Length: 382
Image 1 (cartoon, rainbow, N blue to C red):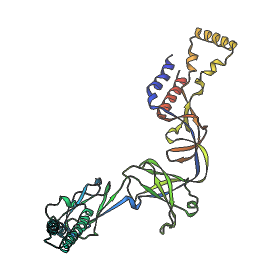
Image 2 (image 1 turned 180 degrees about the horizontal axis):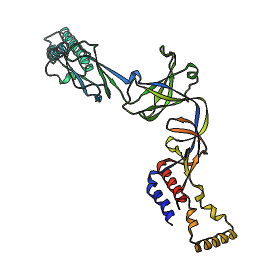
Image 3 (image 1 turned 90 degrees about the horizontal axis):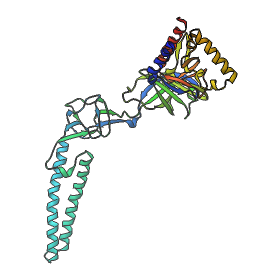
Image 4 (image 1 turned 60 degrees about the vertical axis):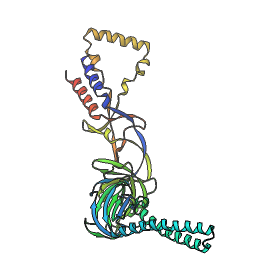
């Protein structure tokens, strides 16, 4: 009974840490290992320019800072903006005066004290002012200013981020003079990353929309899928460039970093795969742990009445002599299955030795191994 408890206690204590999954058939082709560069598409990068001539007074952010759309990023003092806002306010006053002149001409015309020509001239003058006012208001709105809120001329031009992202680099020095096309900083949208893999020409011509890849960053594998075979050969390496999108990528990948990538090329065939965490060395061999089939209930039901009588008689005789053999025959709930490793595929391993659909221990392998080793020592330690 002591030995049974020794086997059950680890099982009860570590049950929550042991996870069981089913071996699955997955497509596998020729695995090519090569380098890939972390990158992003051009539409994921935002270049912030000054848009006005002026003096760069202040940065509200630093390189590496995360900003949201609408956040302040820089302040420019611009004489050009001062002139534009002053002109807009002047046009406001002119429009009010022209409106009064038009209304007066209309009233006088109705009383026969002025001609229709005077009314027409007043309407034309008002429309010319409004046209200039609308054009200037449109320019101010494009700069992020609200003309309706202006009460006085200003030379303070605040620049805002147009999208979420991280400040990749600040270009223009603080307190420098800038013009409308001066690049101030670049922002990087961290919502999606890509990897450019460098392949030999023959391998590159075998990629298609079904091609999968796995990059490894900081001991973590991330799946990727094929996007495009780029049209130009890299001049330095003389290798083809294949663009992959990284699925579920973290938000802190470093652009320009080179990583390893495994690519599965066509043609593919279905092979049995298990999680990499399931594989372990046990007594000098690579194994995957599965549930012990000998504990299935069906074995006892298949015995004949004669066999049951013999078993009962044996148990009676055995108990009379101490009953130790019964406990020594108790087996651990898991067993080690020796497997042959075909190749590593991201977080999975293609193997021989298990069948598709067969249950195996995917997590908590250490606890199962400890359990089996203790069981092994117990059997021989009398």
